[in-house]
Image 1 (cartoon, one colour):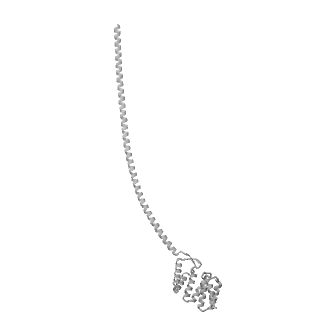
Image 2 (cartoon, one colour):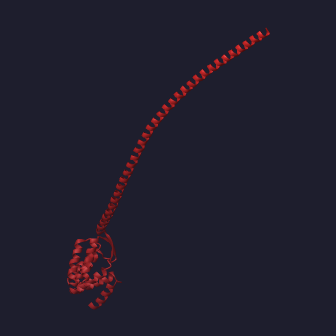
Image 3 (cartoon, one colour):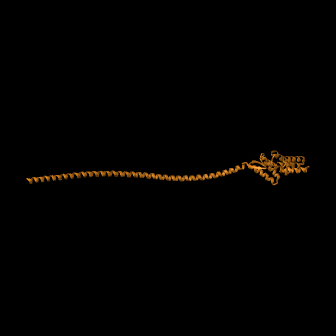
Length: 263
């Protein structure tokens, strides 16, 4: 009985063991299926994710390619703009150089014109003259004509000198040279023995400039003309007037000497 019980116990134990093994087998089998499904599911998810990643990567690559193409186009456009700006800069530089050259030429021409205008104006602009104790303004042409007339007088051609001096006085009757021109005209006429006209012009000198530095000489010349015209009384009177008006002049001393000879 004890053996039977023991055997039953063994059988029960074996059954339990078998049952346990069966449960273990079933549990193991059940775990493999879940794991397999989990693996398959994970694989599916990985594949899905990989596909998504690949699709996203492809999309990114495509977008990057488009962006690169756009960037390249923008870069090319920028380079073209830079080339255009360089060309425009070169054109503007050339234009500026031309303008500067033209400006320089204009300035040179303007300078020449101004110099020419100044030269022309100088021909007409009055100049300061100091002659026979007088200071006055005279036009260049006026000065030139008087100087030429005086130069003729100094050559000894007194007839030509008369013509030149009379021409000057006709051209410039109010000139500052008038008194000096009358003095030399009277001397030229005296030299050609035109005593009456000589006296007329000496007296004109004394009328317009009684304090002229050559007034004593003019008064002496008048007395000389009167002597030549044989009017000794008037000559003596002229000499006495000279001595009275200009007692310290050389002409007065000459008049004193002549008066002593006329008595």
